[in-house]
Image 1 (cartoon, rainbow, N blue to C red):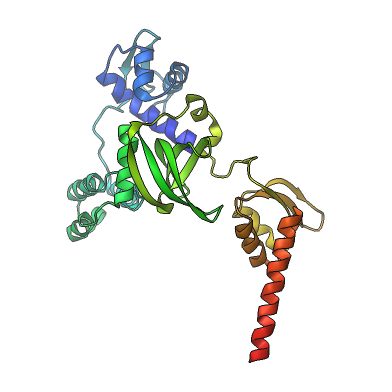
Image 2: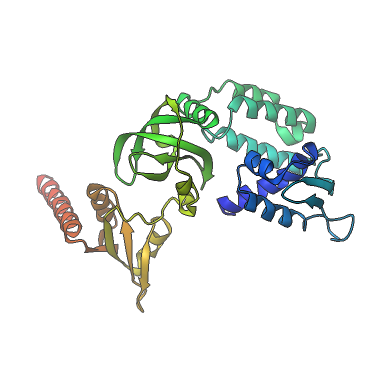
Length: 324
C-alpha cells in the first residue's frame, strides 16, 4: 500500500470517533484539525459514507449527515465501540509495536513500551511473551538525535542537521523545515523542506549524525508540500548529472535496486537506462563493482573515470601477483 493510501485509510478510520466526539463541527474547522483541505475532507466523507459491514444495507453502512456547515455521525457501524482483540490480533499488534520501537523517531519508545505492557497484560503470555522481555525493553533509551528530530516535528521548529548523503557519498550541514516523520521500505525518514537544496527531501534517521533544534518556527512552502513527488525517494532530479548505462541480461537485477529512467530493453535482453548520481567518485566505484555486467555509455568523463579506476585495479592485482 502506498504512503498516500495508507495515510488516507488511517484518516478515514479515525473520522467516525472524531466526529462522534465533535458533533456539528463545520467542514472548515474539521479540515484544519485533520490537516487536509476542505475539498479532500468532503471527498473522504463521501468515501466513508459507502463503508460498513457485509450486507451493505440500512443498518450496515456508516451513515453521516454532512455539509460544509455541519458534520454529524448518525450511525457508526460499530467503529466507536471499544476494540476487543483476539489472541492472533493481539500478537500481530505486539509484533507491530515492537517493530515501531526499532524505528527511530516514529514514536516515544516509553509510550510504545507502555502500550506493549498493557496489551501483554490483557492478552496473556501466549500473545505477549514474558513480562521480563518488556522490562528489558524499557531500559532502552531513545536515541538523542531521534528524540531531537521528533520534538522539532511536534513543536513545528526548524532543525540544523549533520547528514550523510549516500548518493553523494558526503556529509553536509543543512537547515531544514520539518514536515512529518514517515516510514518507507522499513526505514524511518524525516520529510522536510531543505533550505540548501530548495526542495522537499527525505532524510533517513540512521544517516542523521547530529541534530539541533533552532529557535525559529519551521516554514516549509505550502506549494512544495502539495507536490506528490515529495514522498518519492527516487524522483528524477534534473540538477544532478545523469549516466546512460548498458546493462547486460545477467545483471537485469540492478534495475530492482537502483532508480532508473528512460529504460529500453533490446531483443537480446540487454537494457539501456539512465541513472542520476550525486558524486562521480561514488558512481565510479559502483560501476567498477559491477564489472563487465554494466557499461557506462555516457557522459564521457564518467566513462573515463570508470576505465581509469578499473585499469588501476588490474595494475594493482598484477603487482600483487608479481610480488607473490
